[in-house]
View 1 (cartoon, rainbow, N blue to C red):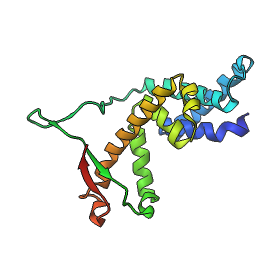
View 2: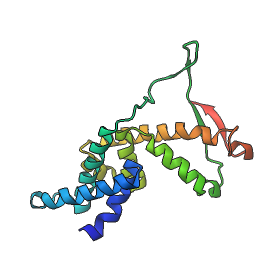
View 3: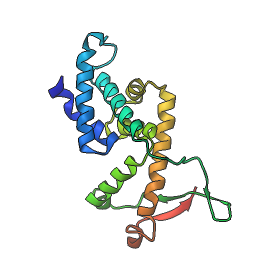
View 4: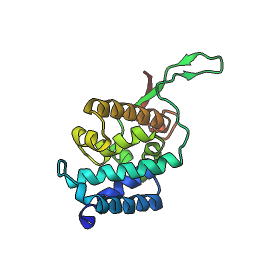
Length: 184
């Protein structure tokens, strides 16, 4: 069980914790908890899904201990005068593949994912990074499939907004003429 699933459980923990040492701790906690609860595993889901659920819960407990203040993506941006401004998003459809695959962008993306709230990050990591289905993600997080879809949509919007400054015309990509900003 450990040999087969430790890589994927560690990757999930690393994405959620954004810290290799803490990810290793989550990995250990996951397999210790799984071993202790093995007699209660009913087989209604795959073993990997069950382990993902245990790992997600272990990571969530650690994250709650070090809670970081977050801001809502639903709140409008306000100017100094108190007026609401539209949020800006970049159209990335014309970006060259080599920019998307660069190490610099990978670091920027990892940093943006780490800034997501716990609930959005968990859904995003399981669905878009680990490639689990909506049903599997819902089972792991104990959510409805509709709830998973809503959180995934919000996570993607939050990431897109965070990455807008990286892809903005005044930034790296804009200087090459590859992107433009539009109001949403």
